[in-house]
Length: 278
Image 1 (tube, rainbow, N blue to C red):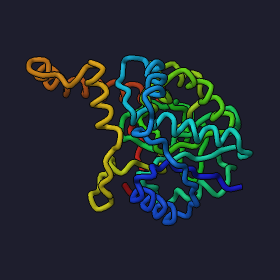
Image 2 (image 1 turned 30 degrees about the vertical axis):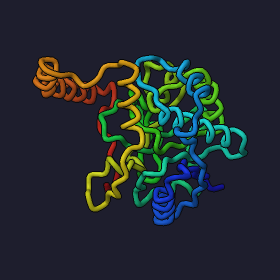
Image 3 (image 1 turned 120 degrees about the vertical axis):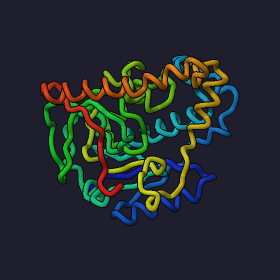
Image 4 (image 1 turned 180 degrees about the vertical axis):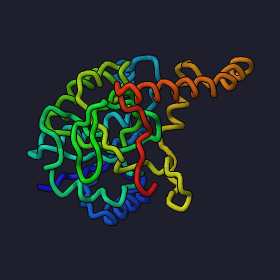
């Protein structure tokens, strides 16, 4: 049984719809479109309800609310379906050339003890379990043990979708923080594997200009505006900015040293997740 691919797309973004369908056709995936919740259409009462569920540590604008609601919409579809696994995508991703083989059937996916297999890379350093969980089509899978941003491409089991619906019923923040950041309190109740190399990457993270379409993140402006409106910490200025920039290389050096130490001691695999072709 093939693994269904659900992609979230705004009605007012037909260019993204066409781009994603072309990308799926390139690698042999047959996707199903799910109309995204439009942040512009969320009324004041619903915004107030969702705002009451935020942590207060992050800004929460209509765009973030819409992302949260859109993914919950797909989780409900998966929970009501009869398939064991499904793939959820946002409409601005690129697939690696070998991605199609992962959708032919679910035999490569783990048993029901795993909720999510994260298939994208945000090009950030992440911490993985030293123990290899399994391999599939030349890709490794290990437990994800640190924050890895983005919700643009992930496999989710049917029990995992039900668990996500339950765990996020009273939590509304930036969805990648809700799903993958430990301070929210959801990720520690989930079992998440990371595919390495990744199968997909968002357009704005593609390194090769010739491969980039030019889609911008629809949430960056929303995040900045909502954080400002909420009076949350913004980019430092003056001496604070100088202090941060001067300390930046030392903090990076220290992080690199810790990563090398963990890798050498075999207590974790710390690395940036790559993607072939991008």
